[in-house]
Image (tube, rainbow, N blue to C red):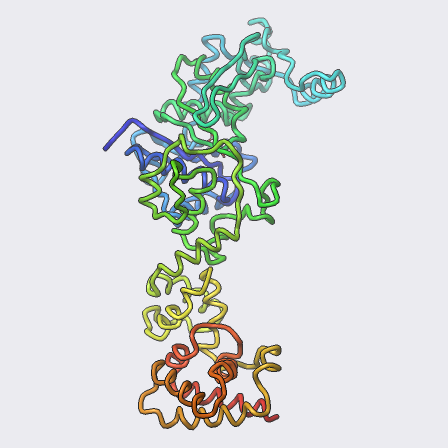
Length: 488
Ligand code: GLU
């Protein structure tokens, strides 16, 4: 199915891609995939003062890691390129000239000092701050004189007086603005670069964008854009402004409260599938009595619709993200998790850098841990004892499980283990139960000290599976060392 739906994600390279931006990208992607439309990536880099070196690459990497591939964009090309605004300056200049020619825009020669004076004066008079339209009615002669004198200028859009601008937001319904509250906005700066407003409108038109889906912090820009479309004689796209994302206490997201970058989540051990699923539910749900939360990418694409986006703010609940990530961890395979886990182990120096990710021992460790871990990092942190005998033992657990009488128990267990014909979880399980039956000591009283002896901690995967994977030698060595520790 191919449709005329064309959407775009248009980030400014001012830093990392945070969850809010990623959610915007995701909803655009989902809408394009659901409708068989086209997802365009455009880099809006005309504000050179906010440009951050490396941000474009970080945005690309983040989107790719999340699995949001674009159909047209800076590196993949397409019929509407270039897709980087700083490479489209001639287009904006020409469009600005069109507006000057049709008297919908004017050159403004006001100096920054004058603008500041105006601002202060208006503030004092309790008027709406903004430009006083001083240059809007300059005579042609005056303009010529200033131009000939080389005076720097910006180009401003002539916001029509006494009008109201109404646009239909697909999520919020009709939104109306009176033009009195709209400034004569700058569309071309004195350095020849367009402002966000002009470049955004021109590109959305030239790239044949059918629906603009963006964060609701852009709502107040939309009436200005609608007026620009009108001045150009173009039909505006459909607009949908997505609800704001709040932290669980109801405040604005900040880095401290979870507005982390996509890459931060990756580094904290969140899986791409889980973040995709989690972000999709930030402001959207399948609705119609469908309560599903865990949904595959394809299920989300199939169920996605703009009508089901709620205008209410969405809450970013990291506990829910962990819960969801845990579901995806359990469902994933050790082989798929291995590259990420091994990378962490290598960084920590737990395994040597040349250790093969397909090594059955490594895969076995991951398999033991993945169902009980909420994040990839948890596996990496909690499984270190599979590679290194414990240096010490969890103090609280020592008090509980390393008692003088434990020495005898561990010793007898070691003797029994020594005479096992085959060292496997099943045999160990039987051995421990037999021993318990024979001695009247509960299985728990055998399992806890053994676990502490072989792992150094009181929690972890099933003891017998863990012992099997560690192997007989390591288990015996560690039990022996624990006995020494208890005795000293
Ligand atoms: N460049 C804007 C941003 O950084 C895009 C806003 C829009 O989608 O129109 O979010």
